[in-house]
Image (cartoon, rainbow, N blue to C red; front, side):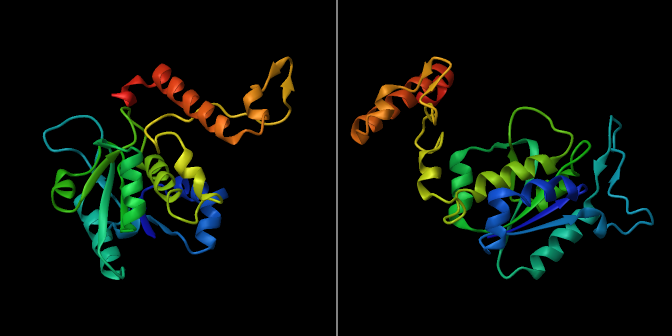
Amino acid sequence: MRIDILTLFPAICEGPLGESILKRARERGLLDIRIHNLRLWATSKHATTDDTPYGGGQGMVMKCEPIFAAVEQLKAAAPGPARVIYLSPSGCPLDHPMAAGHAAARHHLILLCGHYEGVDQRVIDHLVDEEVSIGDYVLTNGAIAAVVFVDAVARLIPGVLGDENSAVEDSFAQGLLEGPQYTRPPDFRGWRVPDILLSGNHGEIAKWRAAQALEKTRKVRPDLLG
């Protein structure tokens, strides 16, 4: 799966996306992630990518020209059709079904990272296919959100995780939060691992985990239970 990221701060993306599971997935050819500095498509002497907003107001707005030039060049060089996703606080909330949908579709994705007061509306109207938000809060820039989006999608691609059941059993995959997990030692400072987990009875363990997942969801995220 190919993902191009357009950002003013490539280093924010390069670190997290070059470590651990995603690093190994890229080395194995499961992910083709390319991080681009949007300033490379700016044509002014100082590689300007923003300007003051019409009508006044605080902050700066990212300009149309570099964004259109970058996206059009990336689309022209790609082997197939691409979807442009703009990371924005005003986008549709990122959730498990959205991530799973992108992982299954394996589209070529071009992620546009906002900054300042966002992008010129003409970019959204005529270039962007989908606006995505990672939560009801504002970040300093969209590169952080892009890393979250890529990680959420990539880990659902077959082969990326070492154990395919990991993604199936995660929180939200079955509509519930994941229940508690334990490892050695069985007794730490008098706090014991539940006996059922030491019993070896996998049928009863599965029932216990299902009940724990339901209880945790009811307590922490009752909205997920409808």
